[in-house]
Image (cartoon, rainbow, N blue to C red; front, side, top):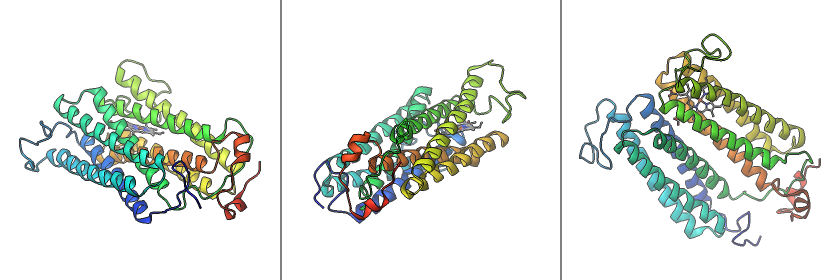
Length: 333
Ligand code: HEM
């Protein structure tokens, strides 16, 4: 199959690169957990300087320093993996847009390292801490995307016919991802404001449905809870849409089911965070699972796009079959 710089599928699959991209994405998820531990254990300012630690390359690993310094080491590993991934992609990848995504990963990780440094040097200012959390989640999404794009099977299936419903599935899936990302940012504000327990009970709020809006912490905490309802509506809507219109397309039904399962886990972990009084494990798992929810939603959006679902009906009708066998999967409205 011929492959131009703008092709969706590649004509020169590189399974080694794909495996390395999966490794880098997994390491990035691990980094989110390790980074989450820093805040959950209150160790964010345990090491006062950056890029050195107490003026040394390796400080004494005691108390919160273990988490803060461990996070720096893990981040260093992910930076190296990302640099190798970008260089490898640049060397072997014929599709220009995939090479650009790999470059974006490098750009994000540089911004992330600078934000992490500023966080330490300026004693954890809220906007920077929130930006650091938001950039970390964006990095996970980019890593998962590269792992998908370098899959030798990527872009081989489809196109599938639009189910004719509005909004288009592609637009709905992207909107759901944006809503989840916004919810994560509100979660980051909640966390870095120290407002995780500003409302001490759940599912009630001070014993009622609506809390007294007596502090910024309560406002933000309650916004995050309302955000969970909005996220749930969008995830259920997207999943229902897939099962109504694309039931036979396992490339869509599987991530949709995973998204639902991760959302249920995320809400449970949110509840456990409160019921446990912000115990380290459920709180940090809540951060990690948030990344999983977002990445799965982004992966689902990419699948829809790869199946031609972001094209207009006219465009979709004209899309060439990428593989005759794949056309057997064709779904009609
Ligand atoms: C529905 C989807 C949800 C998503 C995607 C989500 C995501 C997140 C994320 C990513 C953070 C941490 C941000 C960071 O610092 O990096 C967070 C914080 C938090 N979330 Fe959620 N959340 C959701 C639902 C809930 C629910 C239902 C609750 C239960 C009340 C909840 C309670 C909390 C609390 C208390 C914090 C602050 C934790 C702390 O103080 O350390 N979340 N959320």
